[in-house]
Length: 157
Image 1 (cartoon, rainbow, N blue to C red):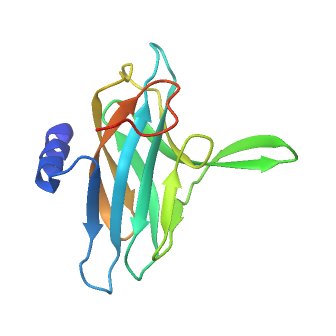
Image 2: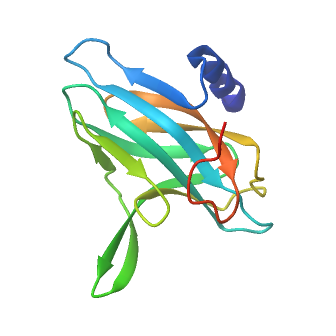
Image 3: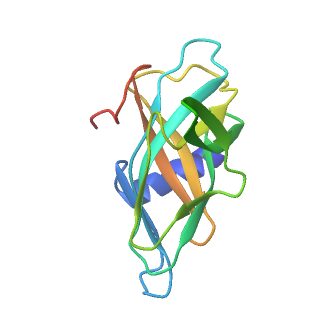
């Protein structure tokens, strides 16, 4: 049922590559999501990486607090940092800040989404239904395009 509702919401948005949520009024957030995508996974993969560009065109800060896809029970927001020449990855338990007027890009090698224990392989060339949840703007349905296992950027739509 959840997948059907998300699919209906995506059709209503009219675009898989770009979607917006929030208030049109200056007092509320306005979030624009562009190019949500995942890397394909091999059979038996325990994680799947997700990426997206988020712009807050409003005057109020917001936070990306959750992410989900239909084929994984758990989604997390992760950050990457370099300490003494060693790359560290960690979960952002309180979310990722999206300041007013800012664009935040989640990409390979940087901040990203991590989906745990996919129930099936994620295949290149398909779209995976999911959602992003913002503290103020709420839930935004998205369709993640799936690129190759070594992709470094969103696949062409």
